Image 1 (cartoon, rainbow, N blue to C red):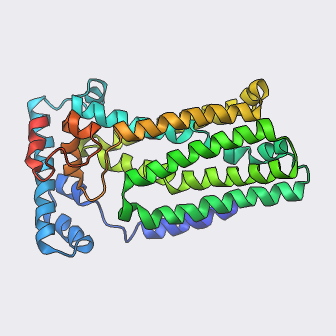
Image 2 (image 1 turned 60 degrees about the vertical axis):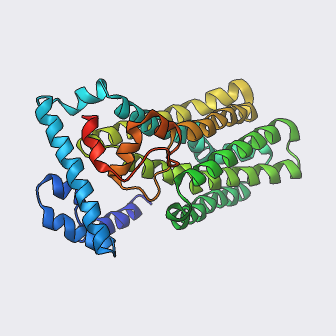
Image 3 (image 1 turned 135 degrees about the vertical axis):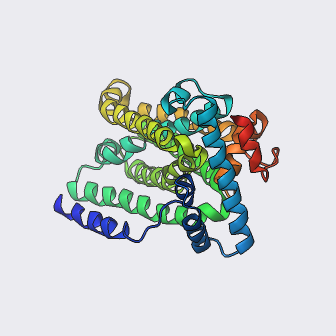
Length: 315
C-alpha cells in the first residue's frame, strides 16, 4: 500500500520538466522575454499580456526599491513587524489556513469509523463501506470545486462550504446526541458525515490554498505561505490528537457541536476578512490589501484595482 504512493511521485517528477517558471519569478530574475512567453501561453489577448507584464514589472520594481530604501530588511523581520497591508494579508492567509482544520475535517475523516460506530454501526463490512463513501464524497466534490472556482469565484464557494459545514456539523452532533442508534440515526449520521466532507471539499478545502497563494507579494510569498501551512498542520495535529480525549469527555455528539460553533465563526471570518480574488492579478490583489475599506469590503470594487503603480506607495 505504501509503495503505491510512488506512482504519483513519478508522474509529478516528469511533469516538472514541462512546467514553466512563474512569470513573476522570471521578472525578478530579469528574464523579461521568458516571462512574456509564459504569459502568452496562458493569455490569448496580446494587449492583456502587455498590461499584465507591465503590472508585474511595477510590482517587482517596488519590491527592489523597498530593499534599497530599507537597507534590504530581512523578510522575516518584515513579517514580524508588518505594515498594515501585510498584516491584513497575514490575518487572511493564516486565518483561513487555521479555520480549514479547526472546523474538524481531519477528525471527521480520520475517525469516521469511530463516529459511525457511535451512531450504531457495528458490522465491520458496513463500517468499511460507509468509510469508502466518505472518501468518494471528498473526491467528487473536489472535482466540482475545480470546475467552479474560476467561474463563480472564491468567496461564493467559501460561503457555500462554511455555511454547509456548519449545518452538517450541528446536525451530526444533534443526531449523535439525540437520535440514538436506530436505523434513522445511522442513516442521518452517514449522510451528514458525507455531506460535511463534501461541503469541505467544494470550498474551504481547496480554496484555502488558492487564496493563500494569491494574496502575498512576491518578495515574501514563500515565507508567508509556509507560515500559513505551518498553522494548518499544527491545527490539524491538535484536532486529530485531541478528538478522542475531547469526545470521551463531552461525547462525540458534543464534540461535533463544538466544531459547528467554530464553523459558524469561520462564516463570519470569510465575510469580513477574505476578499474576492477572482479575476484579479496578483498585483491588483496587493493593492486591495493596502486599503482597510477594500479589504473588509471583500474586494467588491470599493478600491480602484487597475492602477498597480499604487504598489510603490505601500513601500
